[in-house]
Image 1 (cartoon, one colour):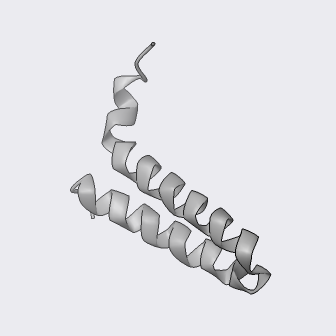
Image 2 (cartoon, helix red, strand yellow):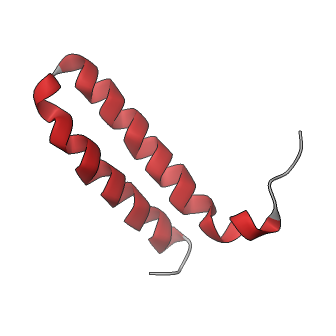
Image 3 (tube, rainbow, N blue to C red):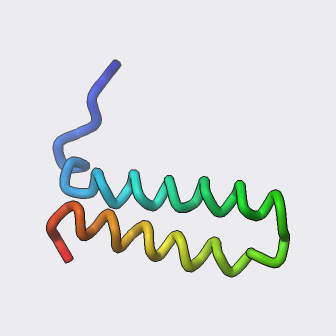
Length: 57
């Protein structure tokens, strides 16, 4: 499998945490449509968690 460009390495955890937060919210939305706001909150939280793990906060 081909590796991503090295310029992506600085954003690795931001991408992983944001994707995980988005997947969690999609699963949550399947059970209750009223949690649509959760998409934005968890996406932002995932981005900042990834930024923290990248040591770039």
